[in-house]
Length: 458
Ligand code: C2O
Ligand code: CU
Image 1 (cartoon, rainbow, N blue to C red):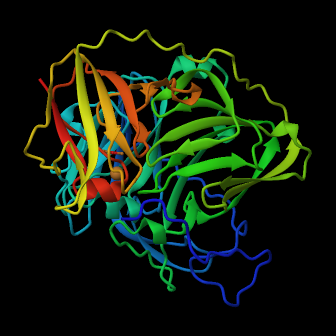
Image 2 (image 1 turned 30 degrees about the horizontal axis):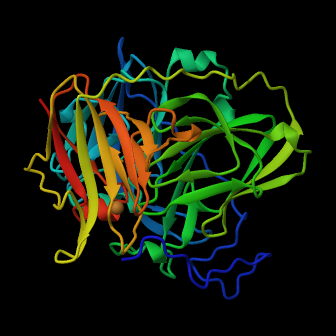
């Protein structure tokens, strides 16, 4: 079992060279950062925007000069970005042209069970299914991705992922950087064969040694000398990213998975386990034109993205000292334990001693109740990091081994990392929707192999 292995024999050349370049070791900073395309509504109704997305195979140039077969929402390795506003519904007609079932999950969204993409609730090949999203939650960087039973790891790895950016008037009034200065950045990793094709082997994370930023290896982004909002999403299956800008320049975190933090959290390091998000504001006016700043992953030493600072421009954005005060936590009525362990007989990771069974309800939750979940990572002596994603709700992280959550974890969260030997307590309120949802480790190779369970709100 390898979850954290560092890449072996990985080299970067200072100058472009075409001799001896392995397919998985492209030169950094040779390609610009692409932005995922925006999805245009097929119809605009009085109270809803309607979209159509077709899931289909395509070919993408991920590595310069090579053609990579990928699976896509609408033709691009990163699916089209859907922009939504709190209080206004979004309806997406998803057509599946693959030869196997898919399920679309809007990660971080508070939606009725029938629209949540339960793993066995499939869009069969050649059919269309309609998902409706009420958007009755605060502004947040959400994302949509495949969730088909046993297949989510391979499907997401091959490209079935996209941004869903939810806005609300309160956030807009804060005047954070927006428009061209609000950049979604999806971080993934991959293992490439020499011909550029993606190699997917379950639990092979130690060999997925090429980091991709919006689908390109260590691209560059020209930026004006002003503030930017960067929406960082770790969409990799298994990797933890620990990001620093030029060795520790200030990043001001303003939001996490479920939206704004109560207050800005300045930091030199952003750590994201799989599926976590961090929105950070960077003020590039601090640097003279011509400065190049590399965002890198300090766990591997690999570059992720280079910012090439250009001249100053007018900047009306700001980062107010109060963003969205956290609502007081209601008292919890139920406490549950969620234990991650390794079962030597099964040879795999379990939740509370069991593998996923879509027909078994593991937790029955009363509608309206507030619960504390104590998440234990008991996989020592193997010592594998996991994380927990709970569908339907945004939770609050209370503490880690009894130590109160830090500033970056003060906002609404839907995914939380749990290191070996750690116990993390989170609290959530199950307000309205009834039905069956899943919770799982979001290291998708783990969930695909059964590290997932079911809760039912009754
Ligand atoms: Cu991001 Cu159950 O998924
Ligand atoms: Cu796991």
